[in-house]
Amino acid sequence: MFSIDVTLKYSPIPVSVQRKEVEDAEGVYQQILKAMGGGSSELIELTCEKQTSKKVAIFSDQISAVILSDKSGAAAAGRAPGFLIGSE
Image (cartoon, rainbow, N blue to C red; front, side, top):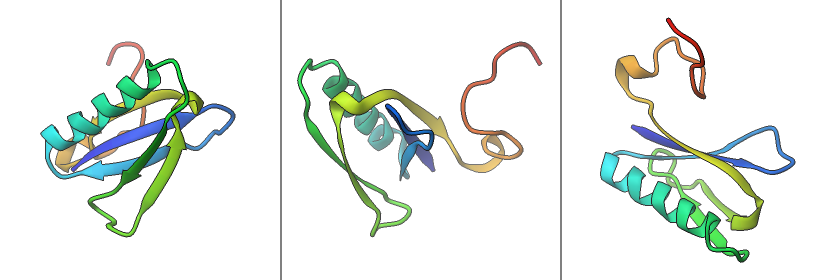
C-alpha cells in the first residue's frame, strides 16, 4: 500500500489517501505536483483505495507539501511518518 500525504497551509494535520499500486500512487503524486505548479487555484478531488468511502477536495494553492511513501510490510514498521534526517 502506498500513501500520498498532502500538507496544507495553516493545518498541522496532513490529508492522506492510499493506492495499492505504485503506478497509481505516482499518478496521484504527479497530479498534485502539476496543480501546485500551475500558478492558479485548482480544486483537486482525491479518493482512497483503502477506505473507498473516503473523499477529500482541496485547493491547490493551499498545498505546501506532498509526500509519496510505501506503507506496506517492513517499510512501515516502527517508523514515524515523514523523512529521516541524519544518519542511522
